Length: 240
Ligand SMILES: C[S@@+](CC[C@H](N)C(=O)[O-])C[C@H]1O[C@@H](n2cnc3c(N)ncnc32)[C@H](O)[C@@H]1O
Image 1: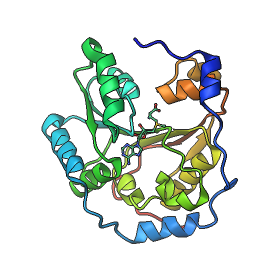
Image 2: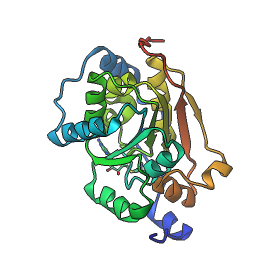
Image 3: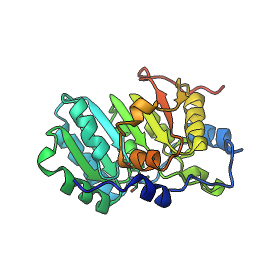
Image 4: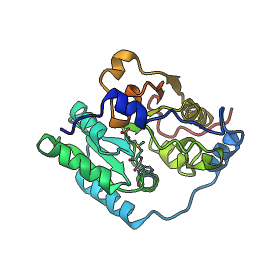
């Protein structure tokens, strides 16, 4: 195992998110409604199609747990150990992070774990097109994109939001930026999903779910969690 940085080093490396946006983006509702009403037609990148096909080959009728933007896949391995009957898929676009995680896991690799390089939005779209449903979907510490003008890069207001929603499943997102978590919860609400925003308890944070959770916890950040229970199939988006 690589040594984890000391709490002091983490604090120096990890500053809380600062942004020119301190509350929900003023265009959030409009963007979410537009995405829910308008299909996003960008074709998936070839490497994402290859990843989707690899998952299809490995699935073998098992339920699916997805760890989107999994970084090194440490959180995915943890999920795989917790759900031995499911196929757990960790996806990240960074080959460097995935390779680092693969080197660390080696002999401890759970047999039901797949780590793949892809764009997660593309994979959501391909899974949604194929009519797949997830058992669980984890989105742990996505890049915050804190500048207001980057709002559409955040998952709550991303053009791929409808694909994410189409996959159903229990959703859990964690962030060290409250605005990100609030926006994601609001987007789920606009789509007719029940969502709860809270803080993981100190007891939960004693055993961090991912490397970024460990880093932010050690740096003293407040951490936020949005959870949405599994949606019923055919749940139609509603506006409130
Ligand atoms: C802050 S890190 C969090 C990693 C991990 N989930 C954790 O909690 O330790 C964000 C990760 O998102 C990945 N990422 C960002 N956009 C992505 C995308 N569209 N598709 C796949 N991975 C993406 C980055 O490569 C990076 O590994």
